[in-house]
Length: 387
Image (tube, one colour):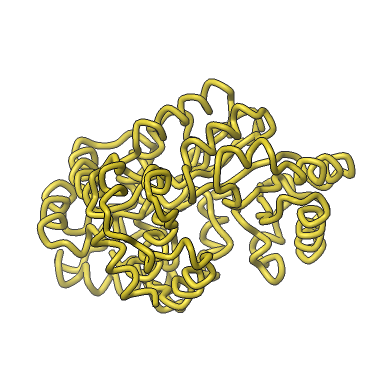
């Protein structure tokens, strides 16, 4: 299963044609069920106190545009960061507005800045209302949740004007679990979108339990972070294939595992080609098979050793204040998502004092890391890769 940014012309028709040829060579010409479109294989679950019944797989604006119609046909009804579209895609524009949900990402704490960003995007898409105004990972510390609150006034204005329904936030930097917990405690946020590894930290699980208790919905993001790298490790790949078979669907297995965490309603997996789409939506229902459970455990063991969970513990420990989690996330963009230009651009935007070149090699980050990753080695590699 490729997880790179494959040829954008890899449509359903081309994928099925290629799959048919491969299947013919392997199984005497018959088509296996896994090569069929995953039509209507979503499960609808309530997104916390919003009351929205959303598909267990949510889509994002940066999915390959060829997949938009397939996503609609499969029953996917939540779209993340729709401000990224230059215009509303035709398959979605054809739907009744109350048949799907979406959010607009905001990166300003200030009332006027947040209001103007939201209104520009809403008007550009020609939509009467948006389901959620979502702060997109702009909190760097827990303290900022209580002190930088201008956006709340913007949200209140927009809601009074009938242009938005709920306030939400994504978080994949800083102390993710602690920041999300503070957002839940604040009472302002109706659903969250944290970066959630297949190997979550204890603090992350506690945060999810708190969200469940407070009826704050959770849509998990970056759940495939370890999968692309694991597939490139021969020993891990062999172990996973021992459970799933060579044509097994890694994506579906990981998604089921993440959806079993407390309070998680849906996931937004990366999906840039049709094969990823099929892999992620290849199984009926959400109950994992024994084979999938075994495969996930193998991926989880690898993730604990190799993939940052963005918990933020290292940032608190680093005497230099290096943006370690952000740096490792950009490395993943480069190596796994095959987006080197985006990765280097984002890294260059970090404040000079937060860049990995300032690492003292003291080891405080590794002592703080709950996964005991070789953080210093990863930072050295990041400098070579991103500069």
